[in-house]
Image 1 (spheres, rainbow, N blue to C red):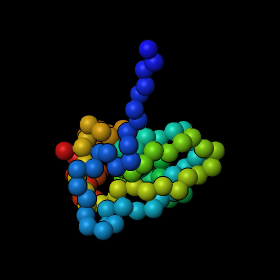
Image 2: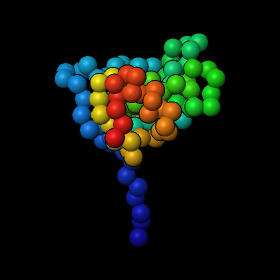
Image 3: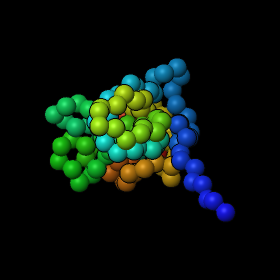
Image 4: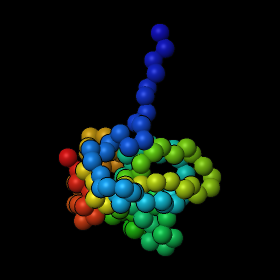
Length: 114
């Protein structure tokens, strides 16, 4: 029997968000590997582009600034995407790359992890 693994769906981590599109922002994600919906993101200081959050980094991506709304496929080029960057409640168990430092970083943007 074949086993299938369902990937996180776009926005499945959201518990609530602000009216209209106040919670979402169009972003540029650096070229790289596949990223699932719910990936915690950090901003590379030198380029202003987003990448996977890494608390141990020293390039700016050590501070969580948002959460990827929908999945991204691997690419050798930068990718345009949507992120939740403010005024939202999210399910922490559905996030990728989440830790307690990210909780504090996101809370500063009024993204509350439950």
